[in-house]
Image 1: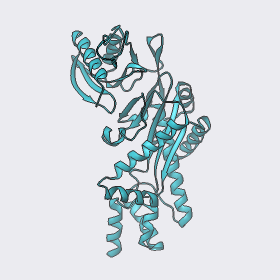
Image 2: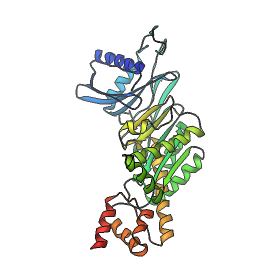
Image 3: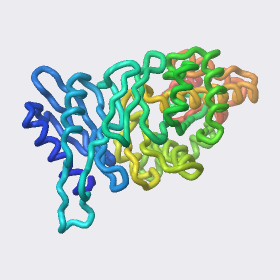
Image 4: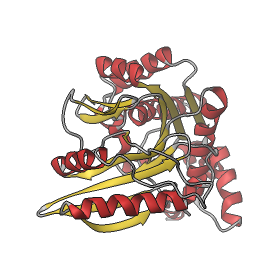
Length: 354
């Protein structure tokens, strides 16, 4: 449930925008914020709102028309106090509550442009590869996974802590979504990221045997593979909370309803962004590279142990390789090289019976 402060702040922002002809199309609660979709004429965009006692009122655009998002930014920037002091509410923000525009997404305004919100904060927009990303003062954590849709090999979640300086270096070396990177570049970039951030990386690897065991325990509790993935994300992110300063925000590529993972994350005053296509964020892009690299390493480990090349994917070609493992080592080997709850397991079993 969002705080009373945030609810009132968002309502006040909506009223200010309504006076300028910008209407609210929809509003829904996020894990620790509020997402609104605004419209003015034919233009529409999404805006995420956050509030904490430490940082005040923060705004993160989230897709849509970049010109409308910029107009909203300027309008909210011009509001000297979004919420007047309430003497009867000790938890209410006091004095001036400036709007801090802390990030951009699809609604950002372009390569290299900088937006100033006040003397204390600014937003630096940049692009890495073909993906637009942004940084904000301080540091933040991004996480992503690999192996979730692959029958063979491990499930991997990586989390990366970045700041605006490391993201500049990411831009220089070409860090971007791992799905856009070939095998040779993937290994090179993963090595470079590990060298740049020796204390800013956390990786959780569940090889198939452990994956199947832990998932079976969760299934007995009425949960499923998405719960296991959420636990892995929370573990990877939590390790970075333990090893460094608290982040300003945490960015996660959405794979499940927000509430499934939000309750597992460490407590603290940080903005939580759980969104689709989060690889546009530099921390998530770096995490996607590290996760995919660790997943490929897991396939290599299996291949070396059994003398059969394990492959990614979950299609018919993967079934053919898995059958080779079964023919050589028996059906029990699947529990050590593959994720048993995939439908591939049933197909392979039926083929053996035929």
